[in-house]
Image (cartoon, rainbow, N blue to C red; front, side, top):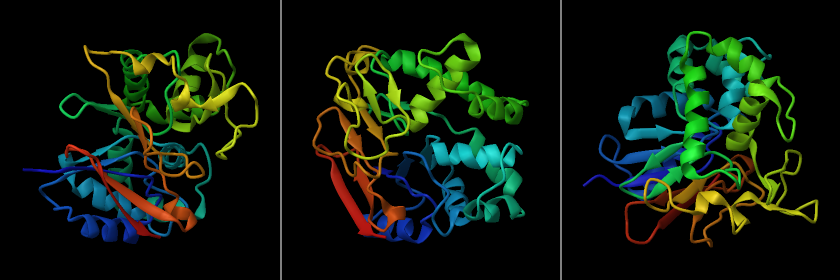
Length: 272
């Protein structure tokens, strides 16, 4: 029987990823791998990371993170690529890799396992169904022929809270899914604070708001939320409703893998 594993933010640390998969006994070609996003950037080998994950085919499920969008932004000509991403864009297979990446979802729901995977956060006023609807609208824009122009406009739209107009709403929803950390219970996000300590009395980590609508039932059941993005927060495995897997590999800490299909979640990690 195929096992299902989820890995935290890889960020181009390909060697660490392969060591971790060996350590956990991951069977390439048989087991399934989920990735919480931020596959690339900062680490030494974004190119090989993308190639490996693409080669896994339908055995690999990826949601897009902010650094993956950064790569797509550069590929579309919206920004100059940072040094860590130039190898990807200069590669002979860059068009195929970019095509594969831009077709990855922003949210993944698995009814068999009872998990929803995102990169960063959910708004406290979003149910899982609403988050899926918003993610789906954004995904269709990334998969269309005009994806580059649309992505550039989205990422260059100022984030206004509350957002006004379609473009601001889309930009805000994309930012929540790929950049969110601290927010108020009303859903006002602090985009600047990436630490683990709140900078305002009325904010908390997005997953700590007790009355958040995503905690309720959607599609007739409650889901647990799997996320990454927050290296300073580290591994979040002490909450019954969420699992945070960004343990700061690219910063010299650890890369973490969770087996999701067992009765109790099993965690594996290696130093980076």
